[in-house]
Image (cartoon, rainbow, N blue to C red; front, side, top):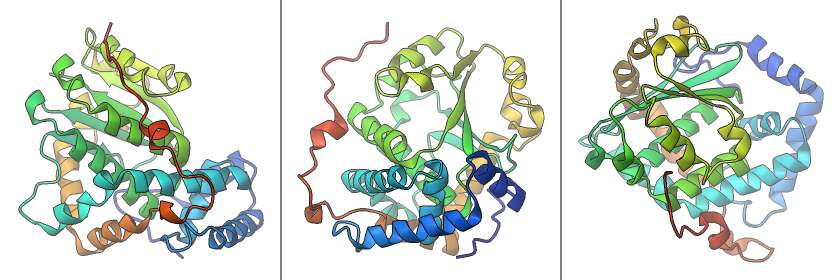
Length: 308
């Protein structure tokens, strides 16, 4: 399948080839690996009826650095975790089908179209009103945005920017830990996007609470990539203005403008159709030939959350 360039996710053929070169993967070998993986999928009862497109397998192979067995495991986990996250996947159908529902209401989100040194920049800011925070909707939108990237983007590394201006402990306390663990499992155990940096901006005092909270969910190597900034000027030392929204003193549109663009895009007939179709990117766990999955190992147990 040839994927047309999308205005929200710009990249060149040279960018794609650079990703392949970085892991030493030739196109001919990649094609063979895609074929072999798709043949393996046909032998898996729980995946045989799932929507698994050729370009999806290619992107997972890139994320898996060309290791076929690792790719199989990540693909399997991807479809399994999405099956176990029914409320975060299938809920998009009703939302996208109702023009009166605003998809982004309490947070702003941007995907910077231009790659920075081969990396995709994602920026997020939250409403100061903690009572407006609905974690199920937020996680739904994160996954929905990833599905857009899965269809229209390539598997580039990420740089995340979190604007914590106006947020506090009341926001953290509203983050449903069970749902968060599902999303983290989906990203860490399956998707395989490499997050190179996480920049926390406008929260010099609150920033350490965010880091301590994240330690309970994500791998230590990701925690080591968190950088807390007291000023936008500090952020600009890591990411040039050319790639930053206006909110951070950059030259890109504002976070609100990006969010409005996202809202329009998911409502377009083409993208809406893709997003609804991608609800089929789930396994049928009742047909899994091995032992039944243990949902406790997915969601974990949460006896106490503290923010010291």
